[in-house]
Image 1 (cartoon, one colour):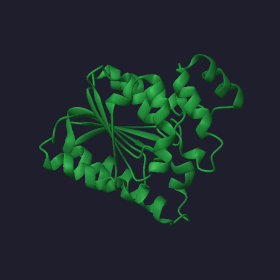
Image 2 (cartoon, one colour):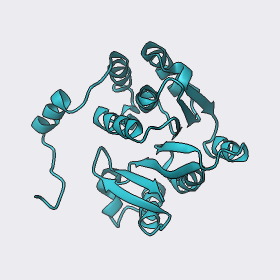
Image 3 (cartoon, rainbow, N blue to C red):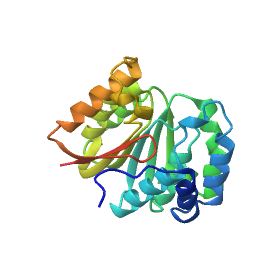
Length: 220
């Protein structure tokens, strides 16, 4: 057994695309619409979406929160994994980007499960806490402004139920996370977050090399 993660050649990536996950027509359509955009690299990969979908179903999630929706592929994927009465609360600042995803949410029949809140993410998270929803969220996903991750993490940990999960994207940051010469605000913020979570005895963690690095956090 290897003690490291396998590097993915183009051929292996193509193999995974063929047999490693399933995509609905709506997912594929939204992914293909987003990919050519100048900011298209912000979209999660379909294999990451499939991974989160399985997690959401495995823990029987009914209430999820997403911080950073972009054009809505992750929202579509998580909402589709929820039961008919499940809810996904999405926090984003861009109507322009989220409007791209809405027709695909409708196509997939999940629009009624998605509660989109256009505002700086800390505001709707604070509202949820104020509304007495602490300890009720089953699954949360963070994929927004990197300098805000630590704030979102703390608020989501408050909202999360025991044994609930948080998935945090971009934790390897294209490899910059170990480049000491990179002192940009985003890299420094992610580095500090990773080190903080590693020592956080409120949670169990698993950092995975999926996509740009995805850390799973389980609230004890």
